[in-house]
Amino acid sequence: MTGMKPDRILPVGCSEAITQVQNSAPSILPIMIDTRKFAVFSALVSLLPLLVLGPNVCGAFNKDHVRLVGSGKACPAPCDLSGADLAGVDLSGFNLAGADMSRANLREANFRGAVLSGANLEGSDLSGALFQYAQLDQTELSGATLVGAKLVNSGLNNAILRDANLTSADMTRAILVGADFSNADLSGATLRGAFLERAVFDGADLSGANLSGADLIGVNLTREQIGRNTKRQTWDTRK
Image (cartoon, rainbow, N blue to C red; front, side, top):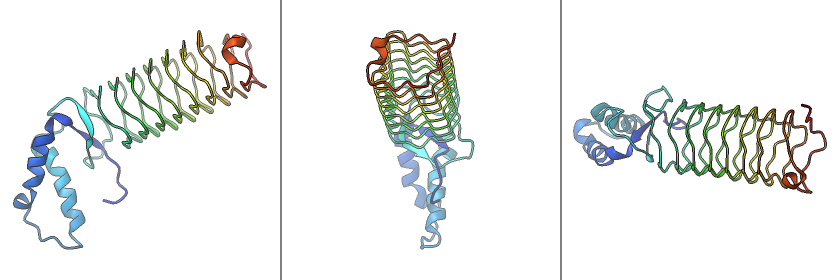
């Protein structure tokens, strides 16, 4: 099982039942454990909660119940991860489109290549999270904390990032057409080569941001917003 990634998240509300099922594994699976059979035994034990309880028994989720189960890499619908503690969890490649992850703790979570289109991440802590090549079109990120997040080559068309904290976030070559950054903090952020056509920056702080080579067609920015240290040598701001 070495190197496998979590493919299904089991609910927090099933914690006690999961423990009971797994503790009873030796009586259910009377296997002689030796060095060659240990990996197989561990895999069977991890599968037992799903087989006995089913995948959709409860509502909330927690990183402690991420299991190496199935191959779908999708959150069971309706996908309610609101308020969950999933800090550091590996959700790369998952289909989380339309999921409710509002107010969740997702610090340093891995969303590389994940589909989060239309998901609700309002007020979530995504500090240091990895979103390279992720799809976040029309995703709700208002009030989210994305300090130091990596959004390189990600797609955020029409994403809502009002009042979000994107300090030092890396959005190099991200596609942000029509994204709403109203009152967001983008100080020190990297937007080098990003596509920001028709993006909204009303009240946003871009001081010290790197916008070199960014496409800013149809974008209005004031001197106060960009500050003195913002890199903007090759902006394209044609209407």
